[in-house]
Image (tube, rainbow, N blue to C red; front, top):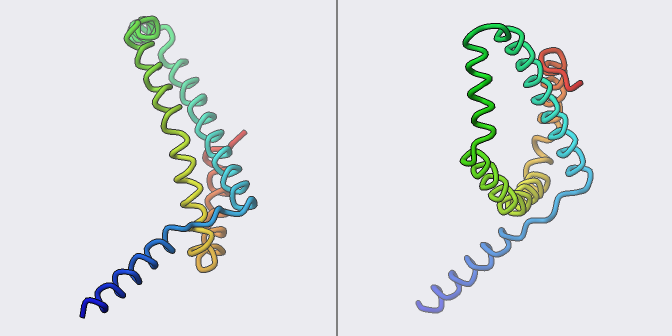
Length: 140
């Protein structure tokens, strides 16, 4: 009876360790991911700049706009805000290697397990989404 438990335990441990071994993703998948990530970041930056320009033109010359600009400048120059930015930068520096490692593991698991089954459908969806985003939120 104890031998059955030992055998089941060894088998369970062997299965769990084999599930923990995730291959690194291919360079092609990493390049594709990085290209899409950079394009999306550029889209967000352009959308932010457009929104900022519209808001600035609406706010310029108004009493509330002048007060808001004065408050923003006051915040930028405050020691508390500078300390908060420094803490956030340090947190980003500390966390980014772990995030990169997790991202690599997820991409590897996706490529090994999900991409053969849903890769084509996901690629088609991304192409349709890119076409729509090019109209609504262009990257350039």
